[in-house]
Amino acid sequence: MFDLGVQELIVIFAVALIVFGPKKLPELAKAMGKGMAELRRSLQGVKEQIDEEMQDIENPVKEELKEVTEDLPKFDNIAGLDDIDIFDEKTDTDGDKTVEKEKEIKKSETDKGEKGVDG
Image (cartoon, rainbow, N blue to C red; front, side, top):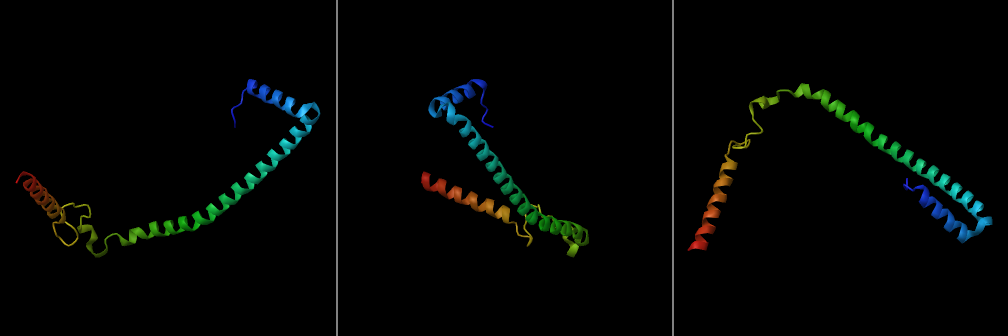
């Protein structure tokens, strides 16, 4: 967890021995052990609670997704949607050539900007 080596542990033990003394050190270690165990139990309880809440959220979403994917084949060719190319960049659903128009507008704006700088 903290990646402490043997040398670091010896230094920590020596400092604790000097600060707390040989009589208090066993009591201190016991109290720290109990505190760490209580902390682990508390964290485990919180983790279990979070996992339970996540399952409560995920299960309905997964069920709804499953229902939707099962219904997809039913809507395979509604109103001739297979005839429309939704990835056609030159036209939108109305048949307007919006992308080409946008390019022309940008080009004319750029040309006007260049004429203003030059003229």
